[in-house]
Image (cartoon, rainbow, N blue to C red; front, side, top):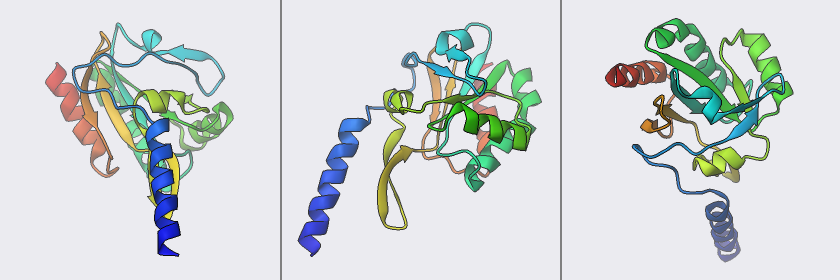
Length: 177
């Protein structure tokens, strides 16, 4: 039985590596994308760049405890973030309709983009094999990237721990100023 389980794990890992691309590095150009926001309007990376720096955060799922805490922390600190010349945008594999419910329920004051096919998550290297309660599955690894006005990734926060994360992001924004 143990041999069969190892074979399944090996197969899962090979599937994961074929579905997730290498993450871009700090100092590299952010991969382009175009995704629908909560209202269904298409938003591209180039639409977001030019005037403000961008906090692009990837999160696993709308309405879950950790994702709600993270989103509400960005919401509660948005004025300070804006004063530092930045904007916040969240991306997950949830639908636009799910994002709209999440925004409405928690009065979020920044856009959420729907990466329903996980293509952007793959391009950014955040769609990965995860494990929860012994079950392996593909999903978003909580990651935040600070991208400057010209589209260069200046800071990457992989495997984000929600508590205190917004303060870390604000500190990174202050370094850009």
